Image (cartoon, rainbow, N blue to C red; front, side, top):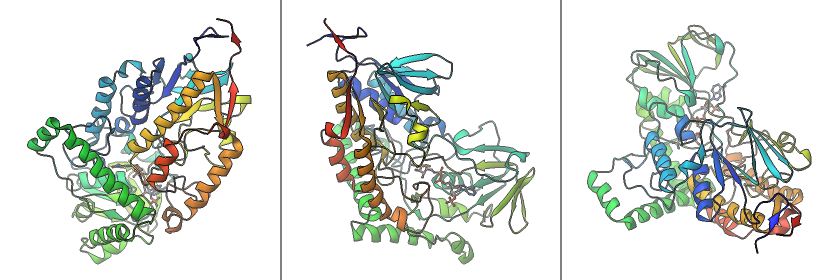
Amino acid sequence: MTGQTSQGQEQGHVRIAIIGAGMGGVLMAIKLKEAGFTDLVILEKGDRVGGTWRENTYPGLHCDFPSHFYSYSFFQNPNWSRRFSPGPEIREYLESAAHVFGVHDAIRFNSKVVDGQWENDAWTITLDSGETLVADILITATGYLHVPNFPDIAGLESFAGAKFHTAQWDHSVPLADKRIGIIGTGSTATQLVAELAGKAAKLTVFQRTPQWVAQQDNPAYTEAEKQAFAADPSLLAKMYQDEKVEMVTLADGAILGGNADARAFLEGNVRDNLARVKDPELRRKLTPDYAPGCKRIVISPRFYEAIQDPGCELVTNRITAVEPSGVRTADGALHALDVLVIATGYDTQAYFRPLRLIGAGGQRIEDIWRERPVAFRTMTVPHMPNFFMVEGPFSPIGNVCAFLTAELQVAHIIKLIRIAAEQDVAIAPREDATAALLATYRDAARKTIWATGGCVSWYQDSEGVPTLYPFPNQTFEAEMTADPDLAEYVVTPRHAQVPA
Ligand code: NAP
């Protein structure tokens, strides 16, 4: 029965604010709308849809997950140009999803959220313009790769040429015939090297730690294939399913170790690929001393070919300083450069921060996360009522496609929002339930290859424990599809009921 809350709202009606119009935020809005929650706004700091696929525009940007699986399961695209599509196509796909499912109008662009405070049983949200909004439900879909990590290298600011992080590419800087330096050899840097080798006057790649690189061809889809996909949606559904089975089997089996054949396949692939490097000294420099899969595997059809280009130099001496004219290494050499590219990744423990969140009883996220980010079932945080995260801490990002993870989380979050709306309550996970569950996650995470494989990576927190879901995809699916057990939550009535 419909009544009125003390604030005059219709019971069951909630105002929802989502932060971020990337893959997760657009999905959250689509599914909320389908579930009947229509009073929603997406607050987006940028001027377009796309999240990381908007921020990143570096040359060679593409996705190393197969495109039909790296998609919403309910919105298949017949027009992907390749098995692994270029970044701009993914951004356009997300934009098109926002339009097709009618949530684009709910996005407020250029609206950076700086503060969220739980007061008077709702979230007061402050934008960097100083404007405030009030929402009953706050959801962050900010991704985990959005705060660029700048290396702490002496003299970095003194470089006289053009210098930028890969997530802030300066397209006004000409690259042809320039001496370009790239710091880092992660997934981003390897895509860049593959693209720029042979085009620059010289490409100098500064490697701190070698990566295992899997060989993966990237064939283009023919027009006939695209037409067949468009004509028969069951073909697209099959592509999604086949790629899902392939990726999940490989990731669960080879990375989490449940399948010796999958592990052997992965090991064989990366070692055979490395063997394609002809010069034994270069091969030695590129050979990791840790287990494949400890760091995120780099997937590249061309990295080793590119790094063997005569115009490419792999520098493995430690960087000691950046000087106005280039990069100095520990052997005393000065590597003269015109352009310096910082490909050193992201602060992956930031999650939605630097957004300041103050929850029930004035509890600050900075205090709750002082030791390390904590989350209950990857989506909620103690003392943060009616607050939900898509791709929060311990999400299965090291082994499962982010789209699949987000779809599962969004469905679970909507179950909790429905309870919050129908019962007019505030829901936050219990501290003891969170601590107990995290202890099981962290114990299991310590036994995964991400911790035991002998590497240091961005998967790990300050104690070296991977902040990733440590169990197979099936377990995650079961956890997400189960109905929430309210005994695990603090459920607090919100407004006093007044007669309608
Ligand atoms: P990353 O994997 O964190 O790699 C950063 C690189 O910078 C590493 O080689 C690292 O060396 C190096 N580095 C960091 N600090 C340094 C320092 N102070 N001095 C010298 N070298 C330093 O970052 P990323 O390549 O941007 O990739 C981040 C994530 O983005 C990936 O893991 C992936 O999840 C995602 N991504 C995905 C795709 C895709 O196709 N799906 C493409 C690009 C990126 P160490 O190894 O020694 O730390």
